[in-house]
Length: 501
Image (cartoon, rainbow, N blue to C red; front, top):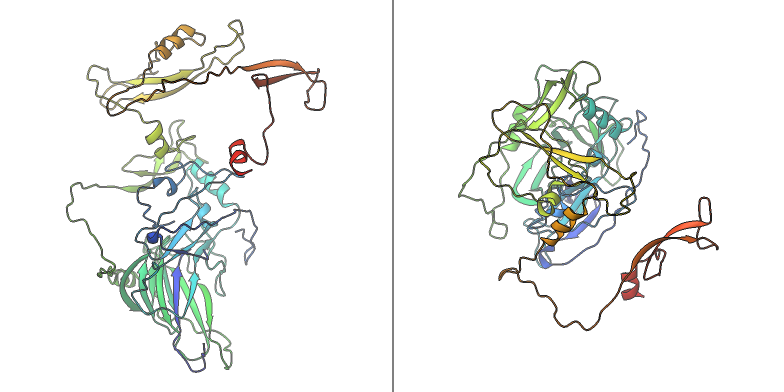
């Protein structure tokens, strides 16, 4: 590309967050990528340590935060995500979804047009990805955990980054996640897509982008050869009288190629709005329109049958009982949705509980309003004379809604069998029958050609060779199936070995 002749260079800039390209899944193609998360220290300036928007039709298991659609991925383990692209084209954001790990683990997904189709605009000559991020000091997870336990203010970042770098003008300062103004000195930007959906092209001298949002932008490099700042700053939309918010600018530099004298300082974008310029924010937002073309239609539902009002709030509340803890005064910060807050439902998640642990309730008008224990205890079927087994009860509480005096203690289920009540166990097991209806038939094999006897046992055996180890006497506990025991066949498994080897 000859920049000396000032030829037009179109750069397709995908905003916010990876350096990987995925073809559209409309053709049904499957692509596999492997991500390995590792710990890494990052030092810059102040000695700091440092699929979003995919529609996923009928595939809720691979998109969402911890304890909502899945439990967290534990260290040393792995999880295979199935990401289904339907109508998305353009740039999207992927990120970790456990607490604030997204601050460190994130990237962009670039979804190209389906094979045989093209962009609804002139194809760019080149593509680059720009990621706007935040920089934090210290151990972000520890600070977040402390804030959640004691109801303190959440951690503040100390600066913004462009592709991981704070830039020339970023001092040590505190900022919070916010909308950002973005501009390139002496260059206009043409926005053609937002969150992997095409829009009617907008030519502007600046943009406003929200946390987690992505934009596809065309840049025409047709200015005088030189250096030009890419710059972004926070749009502060809260408390107009507050003055101690972040006023730093994060920067990067576009450098033209060619023969020219390198300037002492790049040109800074004069069109970058001020931190509190709400008019600029509103003006930009009002320009956005869907492309809504024949090839890229927008099907807006017109028949609205249900209206929902959702209020998300954060406030200071008194900490007057054991459900909360504070670091000082009896005041804590709390967030809620429609005045309801929650704790993570460890050890399961909401989606899994809905499908596998779903409880069905029916109205029971003769039940007294109150609190009732849900309780469980171990059924001990071994050695009836043994007394040192676990005799604890695990409980939860059902709380009826309505006007009544809260009891000092919930009612405990009197029907819960004793730990060694084998009759209750047998009675319950004898009640189980398949539904075996017309809609849910049970096909029981009637022609039995082979009978198998399987004995599972556990016993004490002598440890007389190198195949076993004991902590004291030469006696060890061993389990077997038909008197055969085994070791795990690391590094494979039996089924894989049978089919692959």
